[in-house]
Image 1 (tube, helix red, strand yellow):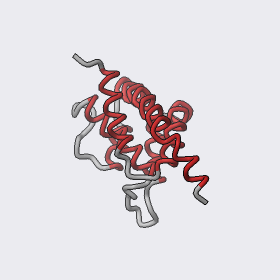
Image 2 (cartoon, rainbow, N blue to C red):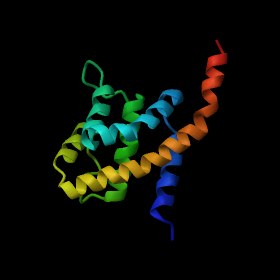
Image 3 (cartoon, rainbow, N blue to C red):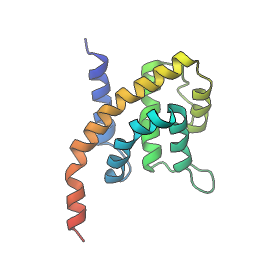
Image 4 (spheres, helix red, strand yellow):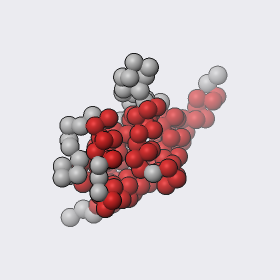
Length: 140
C-alpha cells in the first residue's frame, strides 16, 4: 500500500513534467507559493492566482503560470479531500467560493494538504527546470 506522501510525490511529478506554461516562471512561482499561503492565507492566495491569471475580458488564461498552479492544487484537493468538500466540476471562481464556505477544520485541512503537495511541486520544479535558466541566459 502506498503512503499519502508517495501519492503526493507521484502526482506532483506528473503535473510538473506536463506543465503548459513557461518553466522558468513556474519554477520561480513554485518557490514562492508556500510562504505566500502562510503569510496571506490559503483562500487569499488561490484568489490571487485567479486574479493574476484572468485577462481584461475576465477570461481565464489557461497557460498562465498562476492558473497552472491553481489547477494543480485544485485537482489534488478534489482528488484527496473528495467531493464532500469540493465539487469536481467547479471552475476557478466557483472553487474560490467553495473555499470561502469551508468550515475552519476543512479550510485548515485543505491548507495543510496544499502545503504538503507544494513541497513536492517545488522540489520537482527545481530539479527538472534548474538547467533551463543557464541555457536561456546563454542563448542571447
